[in-house]
Length: 68
Image (cartoon, rainbow, N blue to C red):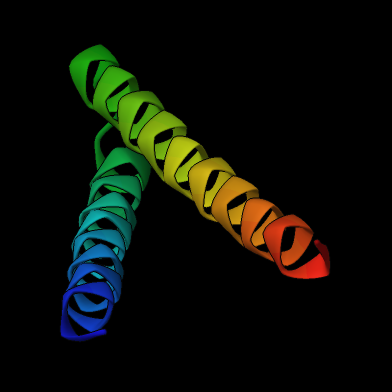
């Protein structure tokens, strides 16, 4: 149980860090656009979407397993 709590806390922290970094990059992009920055923004968004999808899949599988 403690391991699951640690994993969830780590995922939340990682998500928060990525979102904060994304927000900062978007601010900088509005002030002074750069192609490398746009690429990094795209990569961060892709990573956040991947994490969200993985979380939804885990939740679905947990619910499905609970029905058996």
